[in-house]
Length: 97
Image (cartoon, rainbow, N blue to C red; front, side, top):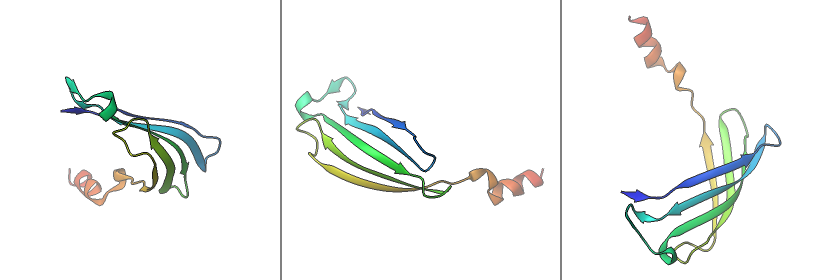
């Protein structure tokens, strides 16, 4: 089992976007962490754009704080929200009871 904590802190000045900082890491196996030199620790300033009620775009550029991490990473994640509470199979099972 490995240990790799991650965290995000954001501030939302508008309902259309927020800004924040993301942290990703990898320390190695529990009880047997790799040396600090080989650990992976990355920090990303990010912007999340809420382009519609169902779509979000996450953009960031991050850097690695240790030698075991890439020096520069640019990311763009396109996310879609789903509402599983209105699924047809759920409505069917509720009406069958």
